[in-house]
Length: 498
Image 1 (cartoon, rainbow, N blue to C red):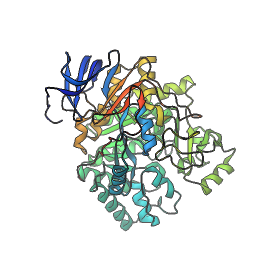
Image 2: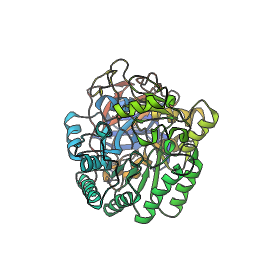
Image 3: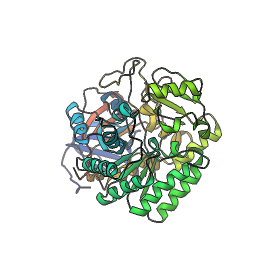
Image 4: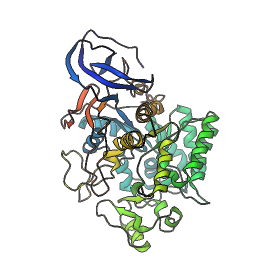
């Protein structure tokens, strides 16, 4: 972090909050001053200020940092702001072309900070199918039904894919997003070569593991072991996306593998979200009807996002996968009302040093079009409830209701832990995830007694409650519990190679 800068008078002073700084362990009543987008005072006594806000009885913490948000539209990012998020990054799917996506977001403006990884999947789409995906996950979804991009690569094709990914790193990408589970037959060598590329530039990879089945062959344990082996063989930083939905009921074995890897000095990091259902495009290989019994689910456990349809049988599922492979579908893996399933989910959230990340999906209108920039959201807009509620749900459940984590530790998993994952590739992240003099004024003020999610699968458009104020770069995006729709202070978070 840059050297602390004190000022004689701050722009805004937050008086009397319970202030949390996960890096120093601070958990005490303090007064926090903000000037020109930075924190300029964290003091036991009030300091002079042009404007003062009384936030006594509230918690003041770093704004939450989401490593895994596909919800990159203005409207969806507003919903994430109401969930306490000040930085939302598209790292698992990545984006393409990276420079163009950054420029578009900057020109349009964003309410919170944004950033993207290079997209391995979309690089393959360009090389194998000759298409030009544009954007984040929506660009991937448009062409995910392509005929060849999942094929095993020849040496020439592999070189072209790697060159495309490398070029995206030089455009400012925050690492390499690898949707390996969407193309499981691509081969181990290609993944190893991606890890070698990441190691060469010292950037992270963000991997959706190849398998998630509970029984041999192609188990969740096998999928995670491949990621760990790549870390061992290359010394690359390998980040495991949504370890909860990748591991499912194998979470204890997977957790043991990750812990062992770290004990041996490997750079393996993890993330999880607090929901039993996932969501993705319906055409992914792991949702083929032949594989569903291995996951312990049936076609009726899938729910089409925009229509609410549950495929009645294998034939109907295959028909949808053939005609609309990019359609978004909720996958009900775990029943949160079942004590055994809820215990599985809890154990994934409690794995040491696991960051909280939403895997948020952008809101779509009833006709299936993305809601780009509308407020309030159009009636009956659809998404996964994790877009609206991941972080407030995590805090409300794991801290207030169950007492499984201290508030400081829970906040660390939402702030400093994800910032640390990116500190090497994006030095500006060293100023985030902290409440210290000199840190960026990306801050959330919330009521611990009230913080909670309200979104459901049936009504995902309900925002979280309990966030009183949210600042991004010192500018209010939420003030007095109200979103300010005109506020667009979000800045690009870019990799150092760009």
